[in-house]
Image 1 (cartoon, rainbow, N blue to C red):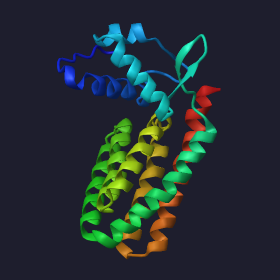
Image 2 (tube, rainbow, N blue to C red; image 1 turned 90 degrees about the vertical axis):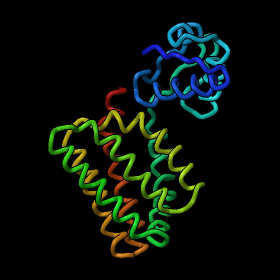
Image 3 (cartoon, rainbow, N blue to C red; image 1 turned 135 degrees about the horizontal axis):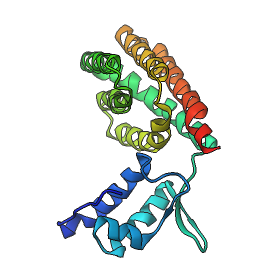
Length: 222
């Protein structure tokens, strides 16, 4: 774990929490790996108290679990959890896309076209892993254009949970191209202004993402 330097005591708890959370979501702390307070505190240069609080909050968030006589451990990747997250995302992000189409279609279409163009250029250069950030930006554009702060917060949280699964499935250009086609279908539906088509395009895109995760990320855990 890369050493983290924190100087502002007023924000130390938030920074420790954000740091450990990012390590988990990015896969740098692997599923089933134990989290030892003293070791983490030493590695990031802080006391055990903010680390203990961070681990408690991460347990509430569902990223880690407390095991008697063992301590905290990163939750294993679960097919049931993937199914649940994708199902909820399908509803929330389908609604976000419809609202974006209704409230800010011009802004959404312009930003999504720019994102897709950048994604195509990046992937064509062989930078497959860069798709993870560009994919997140695509969905973030839709959520922001929906005009709903609550939808934005919920979609950000769910995408955060999905990241530790999704990052394991983006290893081939075929997977990325499939996701990119999903983005293009969503964009076309928004351009047409068809609410049902927008919802269906988002649903199909997230279903394909789910199947990709089930094929790749979960296989690694077997």
